Amino acid sequence: MTQTSTTRYDVAEHLRTPEEMAAYLEACLEEANGDAAFVVKALGDIARAKGMTQVARDAGLSRESLYKALSGERKPDFAIILKVIEALGLKLHAGVSRI
Image (cartoon, rainbow, N blue to C red; front, side, top):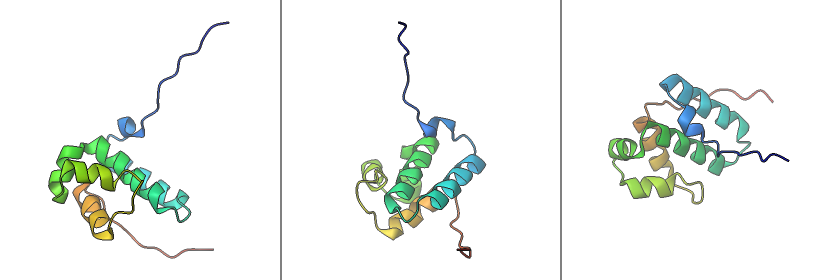
């Protein structure tokens, strides 16, 4: 029997353009179903793709505090989320829900 080797999938390696990053965040927002940690982790993926050091600098945060805020293990202040979204070059939009 042959063994199959696998590698860990990291979405951050596949987010190359601002359009891909925005589409990924949009998809995560749609799929989150009220799970804020899911959305925060998606922002973390995008930040890693863009470079955590640069995002932290642009958001006015330390790199360590950015990692902690985007880990999905704690609930960051909404002001931090807005700073990160801006630092990522993304915009947050609102629409009407069709239930």
